[in-house]
Image 1: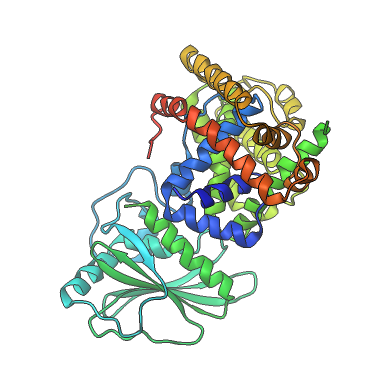
Image 2: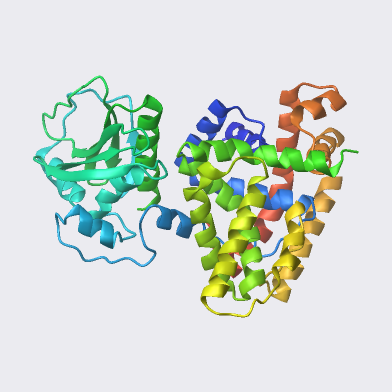
Length: 231
Length: 209
């Protein structure tokens, strides 16, 4: 583990990081699970030092909390048909294992005309049709008080969900698409996206609409975070 | 010697950076708060329901309620105090819904709310209680063996509740040096206690990554 990041985590535990640094540290923890364990160990060390009671320190309910907040139930229903309706998916929201294991996110290095093989594209298109893939969209707006307006599958194996913030009426769209052969990503000025590489191929999560860039970044980070947690 | 109020204030501020990130929808920040407080919250719930599985369920629900209503946390109290109240209310509601006689009176528990740290009930076996004591003994032995500068910085932070700037002033060194010394001190202690905490995790079936 990177000593510099660990030192920053130590400072985070003391509330001694700037907001910018906090974001950077959270990004690092997201990428490196051992750093999350380091945070856990740090808390135990501090409690030991100040002679606080150490009861139940081995218990871990963090995974259960995360799954519940992301709309999944701990005991999965694994059989599902392809292309389910979104509402039935929401009712069922289940399944711990992704059809594809998401490995990491590629942000800046792709150009609009990056291409992949047809076979890989078909595989990722199939993966996107799964209920688990829908969770990527569902989780992306978690904690943002956004309301789902409608949801559609689109030609080429992608899908998108339209949301609104009831508080101010601002609307936005989150899309999940395979990167097709000779695929050209529409580069609307308000659109932000990430490429997520999986063992089945690469797909794109994008956000558009009249919401702030910070919210768009948050949505993309959420999509990546929850995806990387369930392999 | 810094008074207890100052120490509580420092602990409160330590959580606020994460709370504010969570308010912006950053679940990763909330996840760290869950890791930090989960065992204490389970212990509080256990005090009410006396069954560890139920206590875990109530704790899970409490964290979920906290995240969903985190915008309503006005930062006037410590995050832990707010979380404590949510947990106590969730447990009380559970007992009422099940028609159970209260296992513990609310007044008995409410005295804890003004304290930062207190002895919580646990489901730990005698072996786990002994291991916890062993952990503390190990920490204290290791602390006394740290280089003086490191030990002083760490002690001022953990026992006196001073922030880095205050410690830097006392030790007459840059804030960055304080940060580094505190980190090095913790690192030395963690290397010693890591094998013991792994045993705790195995006992509680906690996954070790």
